[in-house]
Length: 402
Image 1 (cartoon, rainbow, N blue to C red):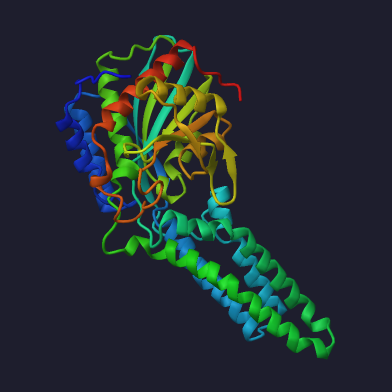
Image 2 (cartoon, one colour):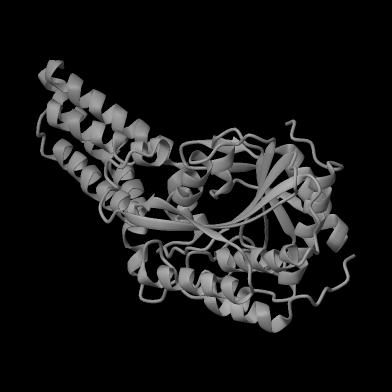
């Protein structure tokens, strides 16, 4: 069990959480205010940092949501009103490709409006001659949605069904002109019936993505992901004062922007630099709740999930056990910045906590607020990371092999 280190007083964490428990939607003035406040905090404490600019599409989800609402509705209308097989086929192609290229291949086909400059905050430390590298990350932007994560998950897990319905309806529309007249009316009714579950999926997903940003009362992002940022900043002070000597490791504490809009900041960071040393990444999400520590076994998007790295997961679970007396439990899947590292072939996992009553519910909603943060678990999180870093630096408890 760990002994409390009063290097950062409770007032320090309280001041950080005042910055990090206010809505900070990607690309908004409030996000820029939070960025400036975090820079001011770092500068007041004499902590070295640098900003990494990246191209940010802040209305990424809004654009995809509106696209889904428009194109899928037109696709259904083309079937109901029998606009012709070629119109239905074209709209079907747009249904499948719009958003897919943006999410999976970083091609802003429908998400280009509002392009601007985002910023990652990088706090870097290094041994004189590093033999390995470690990145520990969290995101400082927030997101508000209409639905809870678990309601939203219903729509995402049925994306495959939606795509299948589009394909089936397009094929039936293509085949209809060549079928006997007696089949036309039954076939038309079948096509109409099949559009109904498709519209339920499209409108549920589209409304949630398009209009969550317009909620009158938004998520404060205190748990997702302000607490994790506060832990990293608390850790940065101890590293700067030599509380965690580094003999073999180059260490970066990264506060990413754009996570809530398809991990844009972390993708830019991972893709925009070389990785000459053996490296690993630990991402933090929904920290400092009152329940158990967890690590997620899968990370990714609705189109692609990667298994998190077993060696990194074991190492962080061992660090949790070393500080709290109980290891982290497996959970998953998750959609987080850890995906950006896994996608590039870098060993990574994500550590977080659950709420005893809510579990992993209530994020991107007003229920993510400062009352949900257990302030005593912020310094506890710092101690876990310190032990994880020491073990990684010494090469004792972590293997970068799968």
